[in-house]
Image (cartoon, rainbow, N blue to C red; front, side):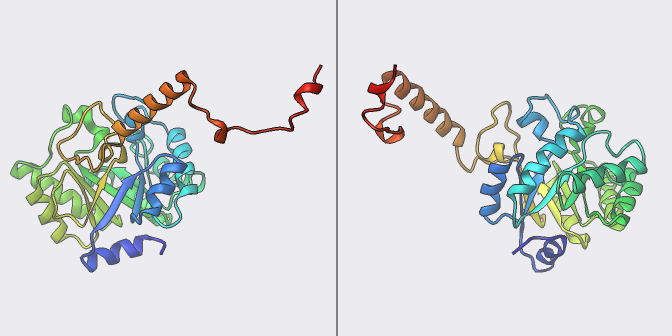
Amino acid sequence: MKNTVLTIQKQKEEHDKITMLTAYDYSMAKLIDSSGVNCILVGDSLGMVMLGYKDTLSVTMEDMIHHTRAVSRGAENALVIADMPFMSYQTSVYDAVCNAGRLIKEGGAQAVKLEGGVSVVPQIKAIVDSSIPVAAHIGLTPQSVNAFGGFKVQGKSLRDAQRLYDDAKAVEEAGAFCVVLECVPAELAEFISGKLRIPTIGIGAGAGCDGQVLVYQDMLKLFSDFKPKFVKHFADIGQSMKEAFAAYISEVKNGTFPAPEHWFEMAGDVIGKLN
């Protein structure tokens, strides 16, 4: 069954945990979609795990549209959500609506995600008024890494916890259909989840959220530059791939690959007639 913003909302109401994973290309989108995941996020994390940037700030609209278009071709049932990259929505409400529209029209996404709380309420309202579903993202918002002074847990003090709670209520009121809580103390994330009508999706926010999201390269141990505390390696596909690459190199060098079953034959007298 096709996942939509309505089915995601129903999952919260029925206490059915929501699952979300990232994808950035057609092949991986097909694999993840076939697993039955509810949502696929084309995250601006692609800047780090696909393009080798040190953070997400260098990702462009063209990057996001390119990768979203590929993912949307491979995802039949999952709800495809595309990140709005840095400076694609902060500059003005007009820019926010235009760029969100591009991710839908050119990228094929069914929803967009942007970072921020109270400060981006006008953008959320305008995008939703344009009939584009919006996922909000509060807590550790990677596009604000320079303002935060690094990748740090958010909401530990009373003041910061109140600010996050106010942000969560503000984005819900603005019309967001869900909100990602990143690197937030588990107790605060559970409190916020219980207060909101819309679903919360946690990443480093404990088990009390309505759903969870992970970067697939993290969960499969494909990305080794660093490992956040909240990541669990569900499989070591990275090691399996390295072993497969090594086996390929070995067999090519010793002549066992390709074997006869891997090549094509021709009539025996053709070669003799060449001159």
